[in-house]
Image: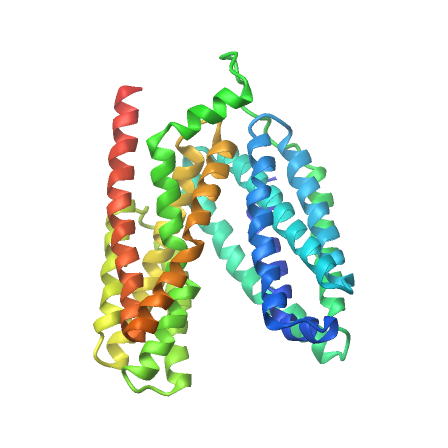
Length: 376
């Protein structure tokens, strides 16, 4: 049971790469513009928000049915995209991918929180490491299909087959049941209670601010290193890639030292700011590594806090947090606007400001959580 729950991000990440990995072939085959093809990613994001309904349901209904159903629906969604012969069908399939994968991942993580108990952070660390393996498996699928001279559509069939098998595995397992709700309150009142909890909004804001500090910030880092520091493209990419190495170091560190959320967030902000002013490649390399370390430490701590902040309502909390997170979709656009008005270094500095805002929010989140425990 535990192995299946830990494997959910491995499956999700491995299939998530299929769309970006086949992007150009799909676009050319369907005769789409780049804007049309790119809108599939937005459809996935919108679908993920819609999938929050299944996440809320996991507080009240069978997690096994929701997780397994999400896996089967994910397989169907991948087949829809793989068989798409029009722009509309592509958008429908992409929306389904977002909604179904949210149901699968969130139901598994909610069940994991109940199963793991006090060892939740260690299990989340393992789950995220397996997710990183999925980041490698996804490209391997696309590359293997291309190397065999097969159609890009075959990648979706392979991905669907993997998720279908995973769904069958999930439905064969005895998931922990939802927590009993004995207060007589309906779903509406329970959701309203979550919406009125400041800790939930702070957690959502923290997740929102953390998201852009990954791939979007690395894109600006590469441009900054080329334009402001005069590094060749290959060197700039290698320095940015050190954050991936740092991520694995961060996961390893969590096995020995539990994350202190506010401290790790402050160290992430320091490392991010240091990237902006790093005068040479060696210093930038060290800071990129540290960004990866503290990024995953903050992420795992936030994951655990979201799942624990309101026992018995983890699904509703996750859905609200995901909704708050959508407000962060425009943050990379803000960095882009700053870069257009000034220069790319200023755009990178915008991410530093986001990191410091994140550090401040985590301080408030920790204090709010402590106050809630004392009052309880």
